Structures are given as structure tokens and as C-alpha cells.
Length: 194
Image 1: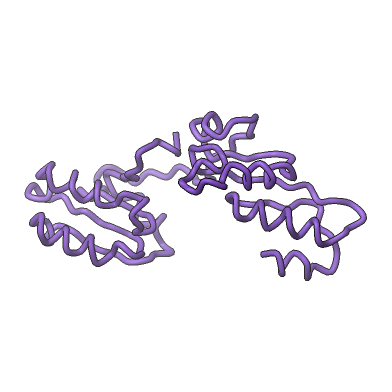
Image 2: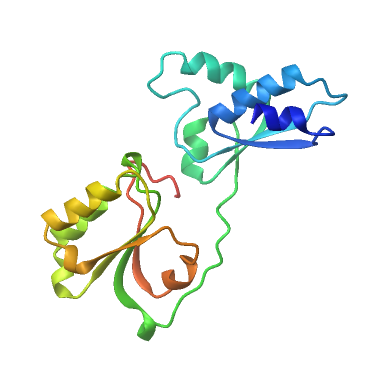
């Protein structure tokens, strides 16, 4: 990111950054590149935590340096806005509300996300298995891919729900089949989309 910013032929008016690493890269690039006017740096936040609150000890210090360049923040929900502090503007993800007629809806639970440990897809698989709805005709559809894919495939088999579970892989058309599903789950320890 630093190289890309340094290679810009003219200065941008606004830089939208995402996550502390991008803020640090922007801070370094702005220190190295002397533009006549400094671009406004706007940070988009979707984690319900303050900058630098991870496990790395130097995180707070690095975050303090990085956020000095940030002139405004955008949060994806009120919940995230309250957690990150400051006064972020809440901008909800832009999805048009579409509902399929009840007759077209199918008994399907959709989980759509990266299949990484921090996304807790395993929790959705366990809840589906424990609910017993697979035996009543419901299907669990998991859209996405990632490092947990093999583990989740093994877990689905071990829990006895392989016959009612579909791994859809990474999808670009998630919005169209989404309208006919009965339920959408997003397992996380915090309700970041509230």
C-alpha cells in the first residue's frame, strides 16, 4: 500500500483506509510523500473494538500514531460505532430489501462468510446439528472458503449432518439465492451488524 500511495501521480483529496495496518501504511506514505495539500484520511471500521486492542503489546502505541492522521471514521453499525469510540458516522451496508413470496422460500439456513477461525462458522454448524432441523428437511448451506474448510467438512461428517449440508464455495451470486432462504446466520461473539 505504501508503494501504491507513493506512486500516485497527483495527490488524492480523500484516502479511505480499513484497519490499523492500512492507517499505519498511510501515515508512513504521507510522511515520505510531500504533497502540497494533505489528503483527508477516513477510516472504515467494522470491528467492534478500539484500535490496537489485539494481543500484540505494541498495538496501542502503533494505533495511536496511525489514528493521528484520521480525520473521520465510518462504522458499519451503531454497535461498532459505540465500541470504537470517537464519533464515527454510521453507514449501513447497502443492500436493497428484497423478499421472495412465502411460497418460494425454502427451508435453508445460509452462512455466508470467509471460513476462518475468527468467523466462528463452527458455531453455526454445531447449532444446526444440535437443533435437529436437518432431520425435518432443513438444509445448511455454507457459502465461502478459507483455511477452516477441511475442518468444517470433517465436523459436518462427525456430527452426522453431511446429508443436509452443502458447501457452496466462494460465490458472487449470493444475493439471488439469499432471497429464497428462510434464515441467514452470521456467527460472531458480538453483533457487529446491529
